[in-house]
Image (spheres, rainbow, N blue to C red):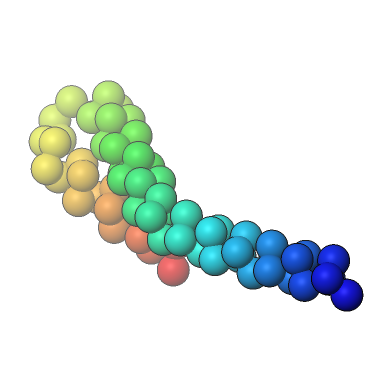
Length: 66
């Protein structure tokens, strides 16, 4: 029985750790995606400004996430 309690506690701790990791680093991935998209947009079109490229990318990525 003791072995089962240890396993259950381990699973609960692992779930909580994964949840906090997702919360903390989820925004990091979004920022990296927007940054990469902005760089590509700037390289493809020299006429577009940094701000415009960032706004376009934010809209596209957030649209795909939802």
